[in-house]
Amino acid sequence: MSNYRIRPGDTLSGLAARFGTTVAKLARDNHIKNPDLIYAGATLRVGHSSRDSFDAGGGKHGTRNGVRPTGGGQDVGGPTAAGPSNASASMRRLADAARSTAMGMGGYNSQGLCATGVSRSLRNALGISVSGNGNQIDNNLPRDKFKQVNMSLEEALKTPGLILTWESTSSRLGSIYGHTAVTLGDGHSSASDFIERNTTNNGRTGFKVFMPIN
Image (cartoon, rainbow, N blue to C red):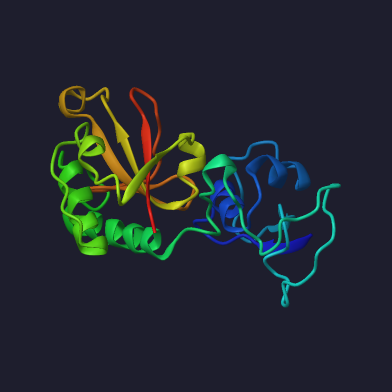
């Protein structure tokens, strides 16, 4: 268990992803009744799912909560083996490119060009050209470079560089063209032609997740 001083802009979900633990564990360990409400300057007690991120050597192997760590501090993210700690270099490049593309297009305001934003990010980060609108990109991703993975949206948002697609959304254009975005790995944001700070499945159907293959 280690201590972390909460900074402005921190969220419990983002810190959970950063330190390889869960929102539920952080809330439980710190007696937080509302996980959506934390205060800058407060001290957070952080326990980790494997070795502590604050361990200098990282070589300790014991048990935590009766479970032997897997070693290396990796969050394997369930059966997909995708997690915030072991995202590949290509996934991190894609997330960085997506953030840059979004800020160069709409910033934090949608321009209705989500597929264009994701396509530019793929080209800039991985040199891959993919066409189609939000609900077509999933079919046009080259299968030798991407694989579909079975993850919840909550899990996916903790990992940078995953491509999210929805067949339909609640907006007029979204009901026709769907939506697509790249995860930024902070537990809540995704980027396309803009940065969506609170990505949700609300009003959206046909959710899929695709991961770059190294």
